[in-house]
Length: 234
Picture 1: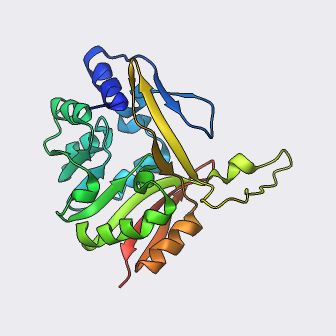
Picture 2 (picture 1 turned 180 degrees about the vertical axis):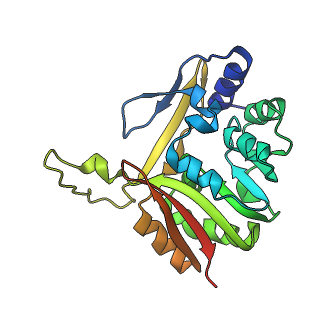
């Protein structure tokens, strides 16, 4: 499998270091992703993630779990948690790290229900583009247990369009301004380009309401980021 991030995770797990994982995007300069971040302990996590983990209840699914730092913490706290990722390297590492329940599977093929779904580190972008959110909510109908909750964090990329006077002027374009294209590169492995998005809270709430869900802001970050809980309307 062409899996640059998974290979970087496996190298770090094996050697306690990894070569440079490069993130390409037409919207930004090339960026280096710090692989060690995926292995951080609870004490090293940002406040939004710590708050998210404290909100977990019941049977929990950690979506796009990577190296499994969130799942490991929850498991240690006695939570019935399952980690899911499409990367075979990530799945191998999570199993070797001692996570009991790990799935190598696409979230959108899942049929089992969970009380808490976790999408951290801007994981809500898993849908690819904002216009696919209705399909995301349809899948949520299938996998979210009655009285279940989705907990996610995201950022509003409006700050990219802020001038030196603090005025934000969003560009006139057909697609949502928070949509990006990413491509990962690690050593001699360059992955396929894929769509992702970061979404402001008001826009997400609008899609949630239309799908029969409601959103609650749990915590605001320091830089246009936020943590939210989504539940089915009563």
